[in-house]
Amino acid sequence: MEIREYGVFHKEEIESLYASVGWNAYTDDLPVLERGFMKSLLVLAAYDGEELIGILRATGDGETIVFIQDILVDPAHQRKGVGTALVREALARFRRVRQIELVTDDTPETVAFYRALGFRPLSELGCCGFMRS
Image (cartoon, rainbow, N blue to C red; front, side, top):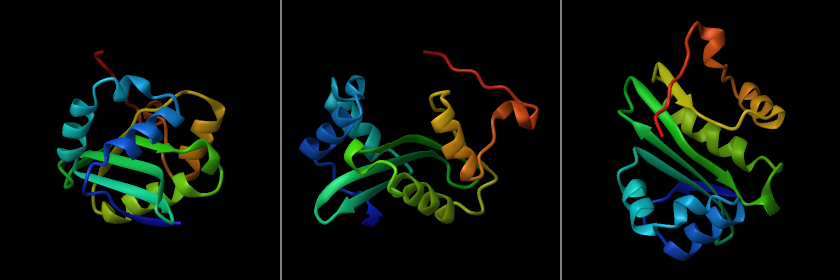
């Protein structure tokens, strides 16, 4: 597996990866997703040979705050360290950033995954989060 920056949006592989994890709402309007990719602070890709198997997309200013917007791994490659490698690479690149945030599903698996990487629920920090959808 190789982690590298994702600089050119390849519609077919992105659509396939997002569909593999059921994130079809993102791919219903691929031009919007592409613009989101291009405006992101950082997009990291995990490749197995030439096959895209995972993506991490970060937004923010890169100095005081980074928000991990998307992290997804093809189900055939999950639980093999791909997600961990993507997050660790992003954390290494933003090691001086004070605030790194993300929003995820509230399942035991995802909570354990992010806790293992040093993330804590906002409630443990005396904070709460809000989202308008």
